[in-house]
Length: 253
Image (cartoon, rainbow, N blue to C red):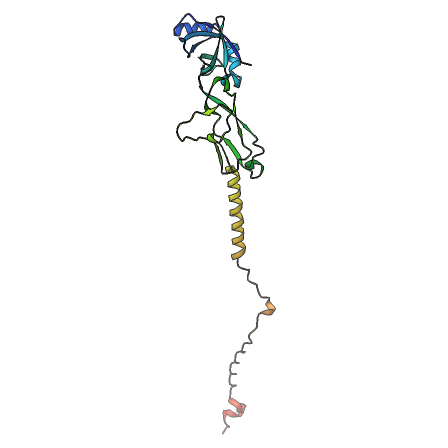
């Protein structure tokens, strides 16, 4: 079922008029395209703001109810206030049933938990793109395109030309362009831990191989002893009078 947006033709133009319109709770906009002239319009802010929070609103054929008539349109651009949750301006484009439209549609990533990278290799999947450019007839416009991650392994990527597109939908890419949609790799933290563990193991192995065995200290009983020669005794001092004793002094005459 198409989403319907209600609008009225805006009669006053200019920056001042747009400012007053916003203060009254409305949003200025424009409707263009097809074989009709561009029309300035105004919409109620709150219903429009809630529509914009719906992903489908950004990639679907919308019904614009304008001054009693209805037209098939696409949302082409929206300007938001820099810091307020407020819509500043919005553009819609008319579509014709027999003319292809060029649109950006969101990507929905599925089966990540079943992927080889996560289930078997402990990897991490990064979403590089969140939307892609396509061309198709209004009746074939998909709300989103699915990206099947079940076959993704670490060190590999999925590119836009590998996506399975709905019938009647073609990629809007130039020449040989083939942007990456998603890729898988091992988290940097896990790589750092593995490198640290490997370095520690290598260091431990080297220390065990080259560390010298502690020298055995011989026991005191095992140390050989050397018998030293006793010092020669000093010659005894000659007794007074020599060997003859007192008789050696000579006979008295």
